Image 1: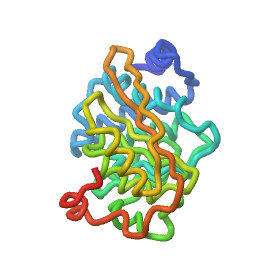
Image 2: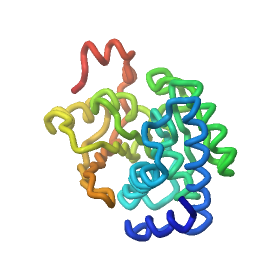
Image 3: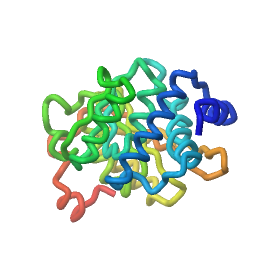
Image 4: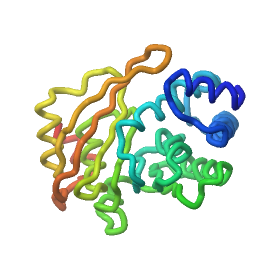
Length: 237
C-alpha cells in the first residue's frame, strides 16, 4: 500500500484527504502491523483491509459529527479505532484514548509519538466505571465514542457520564440487532441522555454499518456508571 493508494481509496469513498494525512495513515498501518506481531490488536492485517475496514470505516462517520473542535474520549480504544484515525483527520480536535489494558495503551502512546500527535492525543490506562466518577473526567468531554461495543446499555452507562450537557455519544456498530428501541431510549434517559437517531452507511465493498447518536441533555445521576457486576446483574437494557 502506498500514499497514492490511500488517497485514491478515500477519493472513491467521497472523502477528503490531503497527502500529509495519507502519509500518517500509511505510517499507522505499518506501525499497527509491526506491533500486532507481539500484541493481539486486530484480526484485520492485510493493508487493503486495514484501509477499508478500519481507516475508511472510521472516516465515513465524521460528516455526522460536529464540525467545531471537540474534546473526545474514545472508550475501549484498542488499536486506536476510531479515535486515532479521527485525530489524523480532525487536527483541531483533542483526544483521550481510554483502554483497560496497559499494553494497548503503550501501543497507543508509541503510535501517537510516531505520528506526531502527542500534543493532542492522550492514551489513558483505566476503567470507564472508575474514571467516570473522577472530577477530571466526569462531564468533561464534548463527544464520547465507541466502536464494535458488545452491549448498548452497558456502553451508554459508561459513556454518558463522561459527556458534558449538550454533548454527544457516537456508537459505531455493525448491522446486528441491539434490542428494542424503546428500551434503548429508556436507558439513555436514565443516564441523562436521549436517543437522537441511527444512521446507516456502507463501506466501499458494500458492508453495512450503523452509527447510533445520543444527546446529553442533563447530568448523569451520581450512581452511574456502576460496577461491571451490577451492570451485568441489573442491566439498564
